[in-house]
Image 1: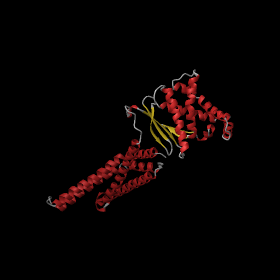
Image 2: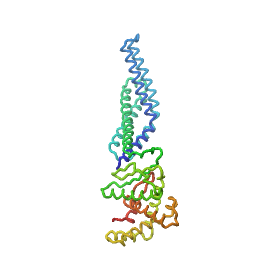
Image 3: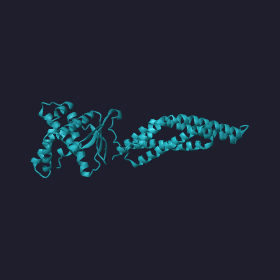
Image 4: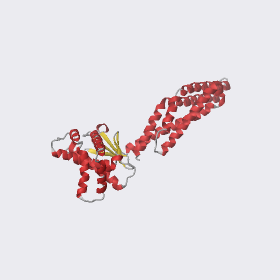
Length: 356
């Protein structure tokens, strides 16, 4: 799990509770109206400015109760959205236990508010003034609003923290001038060597990609963020459109799946399992041949996407050198995502496995 995973959960929860913004506004109005009018009434009473202070206080409080009651009716009209919010939160998978606990308390606060509202409406205005339900409601609304505010503040805070940890942009490059690419693995367990190998494969791929897209220039793809836990890499560029990398990965994923369903896939699996125990150049070449078979099935498409010449052997070789480290990365990380595209190659993992 990465910091980004935690941030996404907060953002998703905030998106759910944003749908009850009208109920939040009405709840704030009830609390502020009651507090303001009660303060005004008691101030007048203790200042002794009214001709009949006690009667005036009772009338003011009664009017305040009536205003609150009318506001309660409006808040009750939001009950569907409030209950929908609780249902969405209850059924949302959340890994961060602190957020789970806060959502649970928020849900409880909504349920308490709705129970009191039902009681108030059932008692009607006359009994409502005598029952003390108003104080219960105000306490419940205060708790409800506090939990809402806390979740929103946490979301804003963790989002700010994540953004502040991004690597700074090069001089002269603005945030609105770049395009981003997020490469993410769903692999939870990462030892140092595996982490290093995955970064190295991505580095080889990106170096070759830059050489193809912008030959003769200095590095123009730069890293904004690398997280471990489960690997997450955020890349940025001003000069190169990085979305075509997603297209390359998508095509490779499709090619690997097609390779898995060849009639000879069982034979190939057994052959690879045997070659793991053999340390000779022929075995290595056989494994590389399988990777090249996968790459070559999409090579014309890659050449078109990258603006190369399919009739030039050197351009075909460039594509092969580009894609082999990417195939190695997919082999090590069979489940993951590139921006909004997710992939799962779990069942095809051993087809191209290369334990060197």
